[in-house]
Image (cartoon, rainbow, N blue to C red; front, side, top):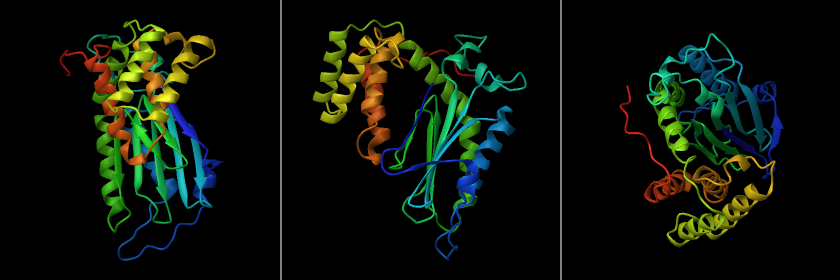
Amino acid sequence: MSTHMMLHCGGMSATFEDICQIEPPEATATYRPVLHGDLVRLVEEEMHARFRLKNPVKQFGLNREGKQMFGSLTYNLNESTDVDLSAFTARDVANPGGMDMFDRYGFSIVMRNAYDKSMSVGLAGGTRTFICDNMAITGNSFRVMRRHTKNVWEDVVPMVMGKVREVAGDYGNTVRFQDSMKDKFVSLDRGYEVIGLARGTGVLTANQMGVAIDEWRSARQDKDHNFHSDRDNAYGLYNAFTHGLKLGHVGRKIDEYTGASKLFEDLGYASVSDAEII
């Protein structure tokens, strides 16, 4: 699993207690704040109600003197025998046992919120998530956004509930997509060629390409690198791409990740099993 919370634009690490102590602004006829703590509790309650998952690893950050909050909840799906994984394992047709994929990937939800009208409420989830103190937010299973208008909470609650309940199907597809890349051999030079192709077709910008090249090379040379074990396959190359895609404009993230995934599919390096999704 890849969960990243990055502090590089002045944000400060915080605890759950810290974010709950920030006073929200007054609501108006057209603006309604969502409490930082309420947003976190909503996600935790839904994950517990649907899957009996609890006690996630929590990371939070604050920006602009607490006016902006961002954070992540990371779940170990093998942590408790009481966890209800039936919604996940029923969809893992290729692996009826279903449990080892949780060791490999896990699941996390990232979120952002603001008290200064600077951005919408945002949540994203999946096996690969990213949240930054510049408020970039991505997840490879889902992303939801909602402005702080009068009925924001009434809309956010069912949106989160719906996405949590749908997440098992997305999770299964993501696992199959990522696993499909692990048996595709990619040499060092071929990886450079694919990165160059991505730059030429606009999948990567020049800056993103530079990061991808560095990551692809480093995975070969550094035994402690996060994806050193995948240094010779398409999944390792895909990881190099996703590191590069962290750069750039927040609003383009979904399209950029989609473009990278499509490139790997077009090259025959990745696919989602056509087995029936129950």
